[in-house]
Image 1 (spheres, rainbow, N blue to C red):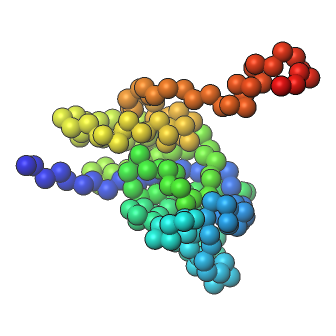
Image 2 (tube, rainbow, N blue to C red):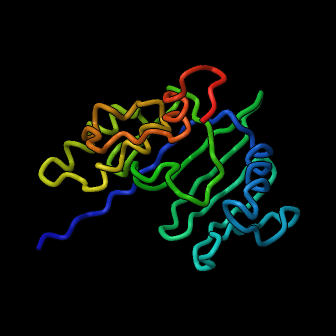
Image 3 (tube, rainbow, N blue to C red):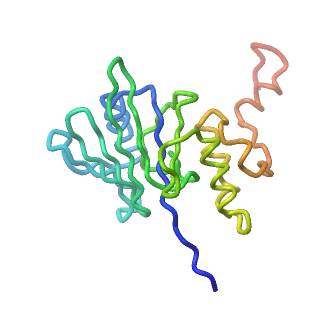
Length: 190
């Protein structure tokens, strides 16, 4: 059997939040999305998944930066504040894992800023260039994780659509919206 060569990938994009806002979101998730161990003042905290103490994400804080290392796969996010607001995020890991981890504060992507690079590219390029090279490299063996890429695509303003297989799942209706549609009038009661 042919051994598959792992090619490391790197991504860079901008978000609207600053590190201060991300820390606020982390603290707001305490007890709801995760439990926090450690102290922000010491620059090192762990986000532990509720009910699964073995799953944790390490957050290191410094002057103007935040480094997040995810639980299982050890993907790394380096977040640096930008002058004038927002932050730049650098990520090392596969495209299908971008912002897909459960133990992460939610980030709002700035459209059109996603850049990518793999070990076989000289420098960061557009996501289109990266995905074309990735498709050529994997032409004989499609990536089975791509069928989950629509989750990542939604977070990145549908900029990955041309390179991902179509979403074949059923559309789930929000039960609250469904009940509203069923009501007869604005003030109707059930």
